[in-house]
Amino acid sequence: MDIRQLTAFLEIANQNNFSKASQILHISQPSLSKMIKGLEDELGIVLFDRSTRRIQLTEEGRIVREHAQIISNDFQNLTNAVSDMTKLKKGKLTLGLPPVIGSSFFPNVLASFHKQYPEIEISLIEEGGKRVEQSIMEGLIDLGIVVLPVNEQQFELIPLIQRNLCLVLPVQHPMSRKRKVYLKDLKNDPFILFRQEFNLYDRVRSACITEGFEPHITYESTQWDFICEMVAANQGISFLPETVCGNLDHKRLRVIKDIQPSIPWDLAVIWKKDQYVSHAAKAWIEFVRPIFQQNIT
Image (tube, rainbow, N blue to C red):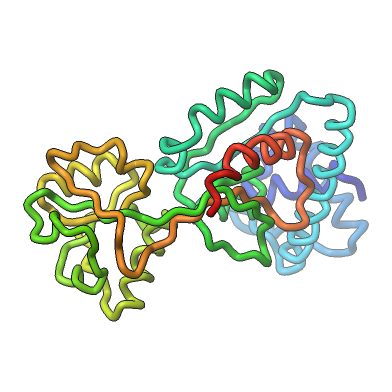
């Protein structure tokens, strides 16, 4: 048994098709079949049910897949570590970044990082916080910037910013002139929030439930500017980070910072626990930490 056999097995299992796996791996289909047959003979089991047009893993195959994936991940960690030692400051980094966070803080940070580390290539994946967490666990991205809390049994984290969400109202709202608003007084208002794959959705909904009501969510979006336009059109109210609120049209919208109880908006950089952290990822972590340290209360 070798890593090439396991890699081939995993690709066939992912594709459920020898032909597709052959094309992806650039291995002829007869050679691929021979590799799998050799693996089956060595293990003394059948890995794939080939009796139908679409091959499927056998029960034994599913067990082998689970362990093969662990071995494959460990091997990738090994090659990444060796690569870092030889490439020094060169490398690649995949960073998960929810759109509202990216637009608020990171354009200048990314530009400064690139200036200091011109040979580190960063690929940005813009997704909601929940999807960022899932992608990290699946090994699809290296690091993510998300709203806390996260499962600390799954992730390592470094806090970056501690802030609260602001209430955004249309100017004609009865509470638009108040300095302080109690969350429970908004129970009859329609809410316009980020979609459920964003952690902000959970933060707002949980705060409302704690205050004794389920918010009536009429619209969901992935874009803060669309949310603001809907609020300005008197279609509901919303909660957004203070950094976003500074860019709003205050002739059409009112921003109230004092909400009782407050709704935290705490950001952290996260990565998978017990996962090898590449040089590029370490460089990013060490670069952003001092930039945001002054923002932690």
